[in-house]
Amino acid sequence: MELLTNPLFLLCLSIFLGYYLGKLNFGKFKLGLSGTLFAGMGLSWLVYSSFINPYLDAVEKVPAYVERIMQYGLIDKAYFDFLLLLFVASVGLLAARDVAKVFRGNGIKFLILAVVITSAGAGTAYLLFQLINDLDPMAITGVYTGALTSSPGLGVALETAAKQFANPLSPTAQAAQASVGMGYAVAYPFSVITVITGIQLLPRLFGLDVKQEASQLTEQLGEKDAVNLPPKKGLDMLGIATICLLGLLVGHLPLPLGDIGHISLGTTGGVLVTALLLGSRGRLGPIVFHIDKDALNVVKQLALYFFLAYVGLNYGHQAVAAMTGPNALLVIVGMGATAASILVGFLFGRYVLGLNWVLLSGAICGAMTSTPGLGAAIDATGCNEAAGGYGATYPIGLLCKVIWVLLLSKLPL
Image (cartoon, rainbow, N blue to C red; front, side, top):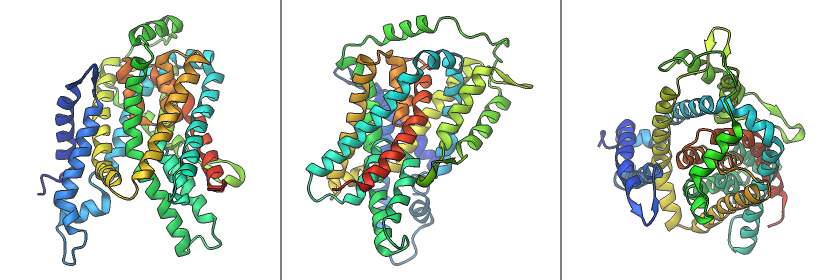
């Protein structure tokens, strides 16, 4: 049983099975890289139902592997953080040389789009909570942040839930926080599935030619901004390590919001912003950030597959339990909020703001702060430039979600 619950074994098995699952045709649709996500979810359910759940009510000492999984989850979060670092750093560096042109022509559009997307998700979540009876009102902020995959937003939601009571440490306050956490856990895995599937399906549903969109974007951006350095062959670990170190520092800087408290960009936002800025600059003293594209693409692809395997393995059993348990209605609310955010974001971004699909696909995921969605956008469009749209909407999307969490916690239900 030790091998069957070994994190590395499960990650590799998820990728192996997911690769072949992603090749299967469902009409004109293929799962692609999301096959790894579904394989991980299936393995997660299998491992928990076979090896973990039988010990949940055990009185005697449980095996070491069961104790580890109960305490840290199927896959330790350290794997998640490491894979996230590599993926976001490589994507940011690949997109960096066009980022100035992307912002120059579309800056205000991205800001408006982020507000629209986060508002659509919040409005849909609130409406569904009003329409569906017997939902725990304290769970709405958790469902909303889970539907838009926002860990920083979850932190604000938990803090806000506790502050609604005179004693934040009282059993009632702790129960409210538990409802928020439960809402997030139920909505998150289905949000990831909905985002990945939505990004793949939208061009088909609306008749977009993805290759033509990519070609048009290349023409719009024109020649690459000059960087007076040839790209280093192979993988420059000094440049990558510098991006990760500075990105972690930037991501953990508290951004004060007055009485609201403070937020931070987190690992994803900090590393992405750092990679885009330093990558567009080209170098910092002796450290070169103009790194060979082939090497960065290998890192990006490898990290993305392992990242999706992690998400599937750690959240799959929760997803299955949610579908068959008393929280199934929260799943519907979460998926509704996610789908509304994506659809409204697409319609507004495409037909009102006139954004190119490559940038728009990344921008939708950035406003939702969905890193798996960014991976799907890059994979579906074949363009690393999608990360430019992601980086443009990410900070505003994060701020808007914090504001919506505060509003949703005060609106009557």
